[in-house]
Image (cartoon, rainbow, N blue to C red; front, side, top):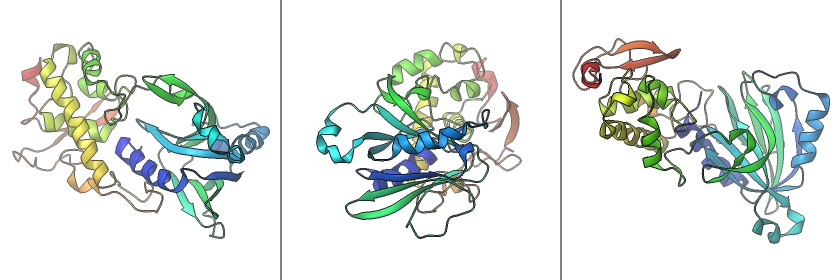
Length: 307
């Protein structure tokens, strides 16, 4: 599943193409995209409701918290700039899931067979499409009210998601204090989106390796300075990944122009089980923690130091 750097790469492209645009129309080609992976039986009226809710709205901008992305919607553009002075109340939530893509196309371009929904946009006299393509249909779209949570406005379904290390609302001291109270494996704690959002399996492994801490370390029994090093490493590795467009292992993750990220070339432990550690030459090991595959170097990340 795309993690923070991948979603942010998509958001940056979407922001460039949508900020200030008006949604002149919409089409839901597959109503299942309006549900979730656990709720795919969609009422026939849902598609009509979605189209009615977004049509005529002005897109203020594309925003993100952790792995969640959304378009903040203003009032009908016919109302002019005054509408943007009020606090926005509505969002179009975009969850990419495992294979979701937002792609910009000219209206006459051929429609890909996995296209699930289309937004017709107009900006500065130019018209074009923003299409949601999802091969596996693990992603979803939805119109939701905006609510205040962890220092900013977010879609209602994301109100439990904590701030992420790359946003202004993130409080490192608070995150460190909460992390230090956890008694589960440190790897599992890093994946807890209510603690720190945006860190997924890839960047948790990479952050732990950079900080030299074993994934099974108990946060409550680990020095705070070491936990701070993990959070700092997570911030750095996600920033490094963002600089090159994120991590792409196949063609399913691309940005709005269809381009893939290439941070996979810089991964130090994730996906390298059985290979030599780049630091010491020890074979990289893999274990399952909380149902997720975890990669680490037993020499560089010795567990005995943290028990």
